[in-house]
Image (cartoon, rainbow, N blue to C red; front, side, top):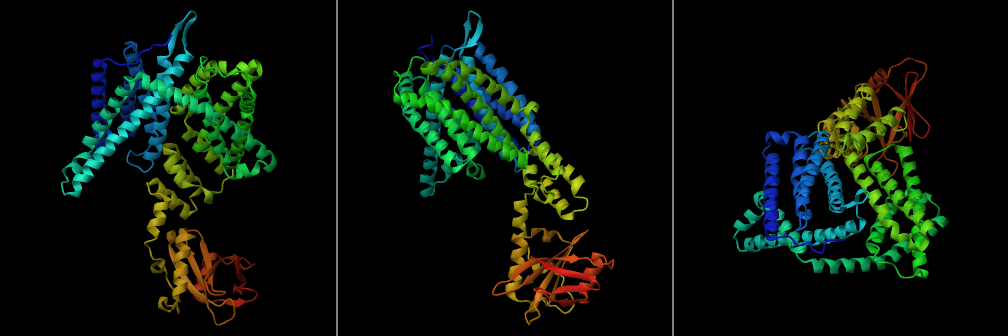
Length: 584
């Protein structure tokens, strides 16, 4: 029998407000630690662990305490928070720099996952009851607590947001009449953290003390979910029939697997919200109910289609963190819907009465798997780095196509270790790749490199040959040259030397120009020509003859104008027996 009271006593209200104040002050200290570079802030592992405990422990107490909460709940909360802190320390140890550009990416993912874990654990611990055969999770209690928790979260979030907006309005109104003291105070961290923590706790207390409102809102949400469920099932069924006509390839080509996973997750949440417990039975079987049942029965087909599309992506490009999470979601969606389909086949019209056992067991497995994903047991960043390296080493991913930013800023320490391995293996004879790797290892993104190049005038790097003056070059050519290097061929910024020589490959009065880029171990040649109004580019390469000239000797001959030109479309450049030909 569920407790009819969720009110909290005046003493508990004061205790929760005190905990909220302490939480706000703790978060303020952590914020200041980063701002002032205190010793604690130099260790991402310590910072992640501290943030985890300072958020998880107050959350478990704020949402878990009521006048029927046993004292052991405090021990559960402490033990779980310490365990999560250990996981936070591990996740933080995989982040190279607490102030790095990748911190937001890692901390956001970790926060979302740990928030989900925290509330799932809170629901399960509050729903454990003693049974004749031992302890078990009471699904009716889980549903009851879940609905109240969701409603409390929504209203507490809205109240906290409104309080913050009121303070912002307060500050801005007084700033209009040149009183800026409030603007100064309300935007300071020492005000923001305690204010948000206390406002949130106060909202939770008020919602808990209004049980009737919570129950009414819950019934409304359940009724709305029951109305939305047929629409979602109809959408999924219609889309499946359309796929049978259109084929699956467009779905996979346009990244539709992710959208299907979102649709299936919405159906899962809506289904369990609408059919919350055995007391809320559906009406006698009718055409709508039968259609709904058949719609749920075919949902595993959807999971299989999306899973196969995900498999194709992995086979082409290897595992990434996003694809691993896609596999994770796919497996659990398949587990849910395969079990739902099984009970539909077995129990026919009473299938919904057996959702509790399925949801409880798979829910526990989900919590365990999520915890493992934040530990060395199932570290997606390490798995992704290993997979990408295997694909590169096997030649399935070309070295020039490697996304260095992904390794450096999305994979943390495992990614940087992979970059060092790439540098030692592939960059020994590739100066451009070596410089790119060095830059991302130093914390500079390739986008930042591109932005910094925009301020560099490539014309200043040119070393013109004898007889060619920069002032004599057409202005449109110089614009085309700068644009080509910035937007198409940025590696030329890393060349050791750039030469620009005039050639005549059309045999007319219009000159063409050859850009020669010197690198430590190779040369690149790019022809600029003007067939009509605009300047265009084409790559050139040496078609080696029998005479054993080296590339360096050929380049030297070009710079000394020791060459002749000959047809066809573009006349070829001949140096001795060597031919320099345009390729388009």
